[in-house]
Image (tube, rainbow, N blue to C red):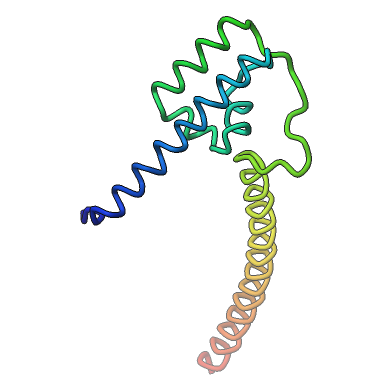
Length: 135
């Protein structure tokens, strides 16, 4: 496994630290405003993915602590239209996958039909050949 060059590691580290800083700021702003705190709310406010928040032990602990203080989060709209969160990307990819699966099913059905026709023709030719060889 090759390591990244030093400048790329530094850039990655800086980008991660900046995202963590935005997440902490978003968490503080949500708490100060008295808004419900959830991984999704913090991710939207900070412009990071929920996966990033879940993978960061410190941020995850802080968000869970705030959620526990506030009690259960009221159910709101699942994802408003035009949302650019991770779940919107997941929905888009799921829809694409569903379309591809349907296209593959249709292709497989056509191939099975062609195979059945070819096997029928093969069987017919074998029978005809057997009749000629019997003579």
